[in-house]
Amino acid sequence: MDKIKFAEGIGKRIIETQHDYFEAGNSDDLAHISDIKRIIVAISDYLDSDGLPGAEINAMAKDLRQLSKRLFLKSCLSNKEEDGNEEVVKSESEIWFDYIYENGEYPR
Image (tube, rainbow, N blue to C red):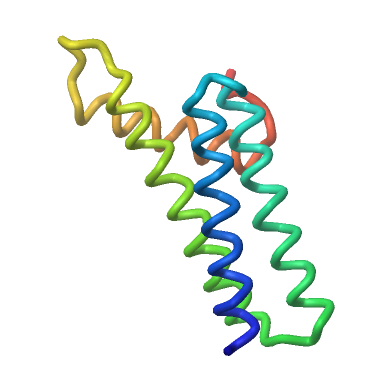
């Protein structure tokens, strides 16, 4: 099996397990998204240290980030207020996720 595909499969399972932990109320958005980023960076760094192609590692990291974001958005949408606008919640949650992922802090 291709090492990158194998790492991506393990990464997906770890991210899904981390997301379950988050959904159970065991961490807040900042901790959860920061943990997700650390997982993705650690997997990417390991593959890079093994001399694998950067473009393939970046594609894998992008896929893992997209999975994480989809799970986060799904959670946000399921927890929205009954009268909340789904498109607004989705848009704001995407911005929230991306900001925390990139900056390691809550938006100001």
